[in-house]
Length: 392
Image (tube, rainbow, N blue to C red; front, side):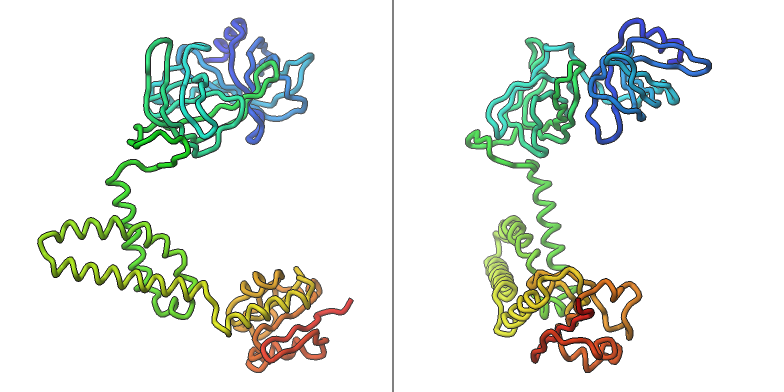
């Protein structure tokens, strides 16, 4: 398409949509005029009621079943119009899969959503998806059950849909609507039709592959970092739901495969018991504190009280600074004592407290002792010391 053809389109009052920046809603409008000003082409759009400041915009339109766009600076014009000085385009967008773009009010999508049964106009329908227009945004990921797409008196699609996108759009009269993308899939077999159900993966082979992968990942992780997780049991917490999801499918498949061998089935049962007991022990160790752990938590809370839950602390803790930040509700920068002196990234003039969570660090680090020397001690216990970096 050349510029001359674009000028001809303006005489037809061609409909299209304007995108005014990445975060602004798209606006439906009309190309109502075009003229050459020196060597530039200026397009007139009307109405553009939600636009009042200058900026760059993109205008999308269609011609003979093909999609085009032009872009350039957009400035308000008299009344409700706006003018664009074209500096890019007209360019054709890459062709998409064959899509039905019905005339207004002749295609509809009927479905059951968490809000109940709904009927919305369909803007276009493709082989794997469609776009619908709604007066309120539909939640991303929402399942549209019992989906039927009607075109006049013909049923085009049936199954289920998943909301993949939802963007606001203004009509020329200023009315706000939402254009929502829907990915189609086959209907999920179910005993009842409860709209609150959420089944995102309905391919049994894919589910088995995912769960087998989770099981292999669990075993690989356990073997690779077993010595570390033995002293830091909370690192295994995220593995518990993975194992819970995967163990039923994996063990079921193995159990059926070993149907002719009772000794093998007995060995499998013993392995499952061992895994479940080990996971239970890990969960108990990670969620129930020992006396030493509970005392540490009490120290962290005391530190938070002493510093008035400061956000301006230097934290020295051999076990990282996150526990005292979490339990004490404080924020600070960590001083790794691998650095003999205060790291250059920490500005002491911006800090109020030095928190030494383990007093043994004072004995082990001459640099830390030198930094803490002559500073006021807010509180010292057998386990921790809090210094005032500056007194206000």
